[in-house]
Length: 437
Ligand SMILES: O=C(O)[C@H]1O[C@H](OP(=O)(O)OP(=O)(O)OC[C@H]2O[C@@H](n3ccc(=O)[nH]c3=O)[C@H](O)[C@@H]2O)[C@H](O)[C@@H](O)[C@@H]1O
Image (cartoon, rainbow, N blue to C red):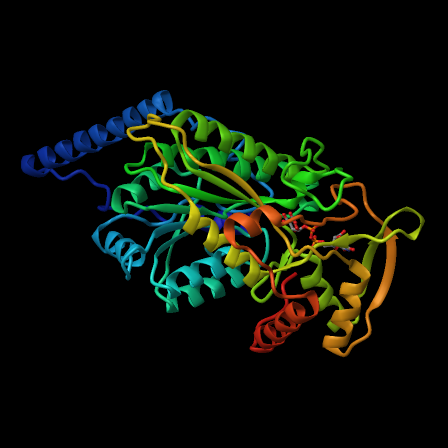
């Protein structure tokens, strides 16, 4: 170090380089230069001080802070090209068609519903924030699928009210199919704020945009069978009590139903909640048991099967995606128009809640046996006590109301539905993709 220093110290000065020139012109030029530099320097200092003085960080909103994951930023939207894409995607292609904004379009149910609507000629525009709750590459693959059938997905969050306002300015949506949500029962213990962000704040933000839109759209949205919580009366009917949620997820869905009622009551928004019962099928959610059981059985990994006290069965009314899609479309088709305008109610509006289930609960251990047969691999089973983190022992839908009013009639049993899922799974993940997680 000292050697280095002495070397630098010994460099002779470079005479002439910094020597003052005698010429008055050069002298003035140098003075002018130095005052310009001073001016620049002090302007810079001044600007920095102004910035420090006036800059206030944006208020920290606990609902939008979600440090454990995800970017909720809205990505590049706006401009004539973007608007043209939005309009074209939402254009109705047959008389009596509807124009639907599908939130959560890159999600499992969102993808299937969007495809079905587009197929029959309805206008469909997707909205999705592509968060990383589960493997975003699966969402991107679904997006590519939708793109091929002419559905454009705007990348943004339902909490972005400026974006929502813009979408309603560009397209006079007749309907909103609201499927964007934080799903999953057990994850609510890990990241509670994400449920409040999407299922409460996001829902309110969406309903605010709908109430101000002209015309107001009719809204059909995804509630959940989990609202029945600790209800013991089976099968679950829409009339049964839903005030004993067993998870924060269920509580946010139940709160959503109450919030929806408020917007129906105050602003005349037509609102239909669909209580989905454990939906499964191709392009499904990797956080759901049937999906990760498949992955783990194929990998030879032990799977945990929950059981109630005294080896009691845990069962679900597993419902195949195509049946759910039929229920969603029927709900959209039977939805009456909202009655408000200019943010004001003009008369009473439709308010509905329906169970969409399969009506035949299957024990989780039977689900595993079906998967074993379809995959031709034995599962390594580990029975564990049903955790007290939101799971309920069983679900069972009474669907007579949906049957009567929507013509809803599920037709796929678990065996048939899982066969289709397994076929998709093997095809999707053998095509160079790796199983999520
Ligand atoms: O019907 C609904 O409303 C809900 O259905 C599912 O929730 P869940 O029925 O708990 O679905 P899974 O997480 O796939 O669990 C299915 C069954 O497998 C069981 N399970 C789950 C995980 C596990 O490791 N082992 C296990 O036995 C659960 O107890 C449950 O009985 C969805 O994840 C929710 O988003 C949805 O709202």
